[in-house]
Image (cartoon, rainbow, N blue to C red; front, side, top):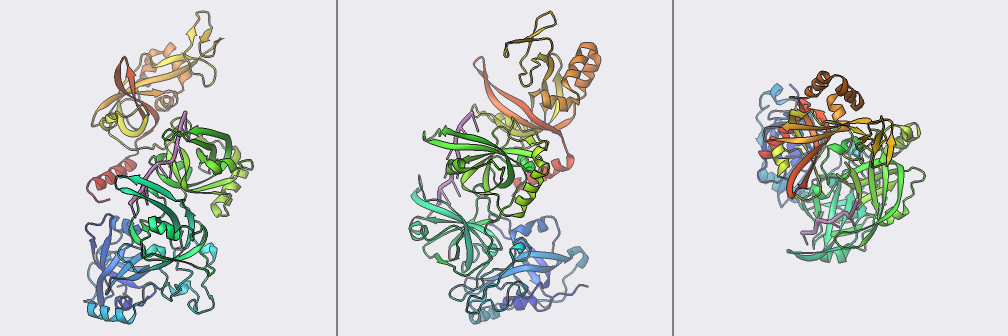
Length: 606
DNA sequence: CCCCCCCC
């Protein structure tokens, strides 16, 4: 039987920080009424037990997957223990390894006794400052001595799993807390963080009142968090806070972050309040300057519209500056579209605004990294830079060097899929999944909306499913047969001696909720029918039976469709119309995963 | 306590 680190629980409660203690989970309880899933654990070291432990939410999947259960023996690879209120301690497990599964252990080891709470209170008075200790191996021995002896972590270790703070003491001699350990459950902390982004001052006015605010992104080597200052705190702090500088910050309010408006890797965000203190940190630190969580371009189509995300790509094409008039205010804006490409052979449009658009130089095809770009569904998928975004040109980071190397060695001539061309051509189907009946409830505006639906083709209209089109590439206009072997295109105002076949399918797609006739055009129809339009057109003329066989071959199969849905007015009547932007056979595993996610959402488990 | 972020 794997041995536990006897006495570790008592040691931690008493303010110690044993390295990677092995403990047993006796029970796990979900904390009720918390907006986010949070687990409280009763831990035992075989001799002592205490229910002061919580799982960092990034470890929740280990509970959901059953990796950790009651009786599991775990090694706490990284944890912090903080004091909350007067006499309570909270231990947060940041990283753990399962040494033995609960099933393997099968029982409580030993007869642990709850570590006495009065002892905790007494201990507390002796060690009021005992809050966070970095793992000994990560910091230099004399980091707290006078003379600016600061522990340095090599920059190359930024992404190493175990991290501690670079600066370990506050100006008043207290401990510096890692950003990663901040929670609303405890309020006595000081962080030492670099400001990586700072907004301008913005005012608002709504039914709840008016005011002004600015926000900033804070970073240390354990994590990042957004902070916002309102009204008086704007006056107090706006001028002193400078991008790229490092500050000690203490005593702000923590609350759950709204992910819709932030891409920072933190479930909480910070609001400055009247007790918040900000002090510049003049020590040299190894706090990194920016932390990206890049999404590769092939993932864009599977993400929700309006998502805020980090991207990096090589600028393969730079468009001219242009000006647009804002619909809401009539103000004129300057913009520039660029195309960025990455190794997934996707390219996407990225729109820069204002000064950033004016000063952008794409002539050397630089690498462009954006933290906090916004995804839109215009023309399939496109990206836009927001005022809260941070754009870096040729950043000195590994991903950028890798991309540039790839681009200069063939990537520049690689064939790519343009995600910002029409509906998006990539294989993955993106957008919100809906039942057909739900999709049809969208009676919205004249703007098309995009969604996904899984459905079965139950009928297909064979007549009028093909037409003879202009042979000029990209025209696609129906030609008029002149009866003399010549075909006339009105759009091109030309007569040709040839034409090309195009497919325009009407298919009735059904799911459990409803059915609907949907248009499937050329490219998607060719994919669906597994043929090419010219061959199919020829077959239609020569062998009607085989033609119909091919058309019937698509019946009664399930597909995931990405749909473009629109209300069209036809003879004064509104009609819901949908066409297929792309389609894929249903992958049962992926489909099941999505259903499980939906069930969890419906039952409040996610 | 904001959460607007533009246009095709």
